[in-house]
Image (tube, rainbow, N blue to C red; front, side):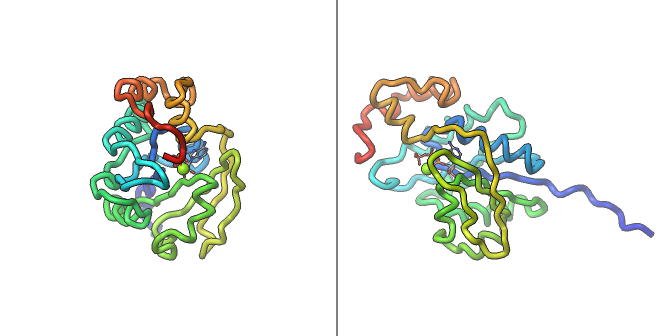
Length: 207
Ligand code: ATP
Ligand code: MG
């Protein structure tokens, strides 16, 4: 007798980020990986509220969460999770993946990360366990070399995505200078930034 074929495992992409603000580089990366890896869904996971990221204060978690919701709302394959925001404090990817693993026990997880972050991955907390929880997908990002960081078990795929030289840092600096961010971030995000007067008194990257 033939083995019954069970329902296919769901394939979930996970896109972690500060998303301060979310921009079209994030959205294109998620969309491209979803298509190439036949993902059922990509979950955007804004980070919790660290006291600061490097030299600067990070915008309130609720603002970053709402901008991410606005940016992804029209795509039925995209969703946003509050798990890192609700946990609070600095986000460690190991906690994100453990929680998602518990929530979606029957799914395969694909963690999407840009070339800049991929280069640092071996220094992440509990790096060894990370790769047992998800398959890692490194995507190209202008200005950063994409290289296999030599993960145990070969658990990483490298994917070329359409090159968008956009960063949240540049978007914040543009708003502070009074330069436009139209077409770098979704229209609704431009309007949300204006409504909440985000990034206006940011004097520069050292503040
Ligand atoms: P910041 O300048 O504040 O660091 P950012 O633009 O790097 O912001 P993050 O929220 O730090 O955005 O990034 C979330 C994830 O998206 C990371 O894995 C990052 O490498 C990836 N990413 C960001 N921008 C791009 C882009 N233009 N193309 C490809 N990947 C990107
Ligand atoms: Mg970044």
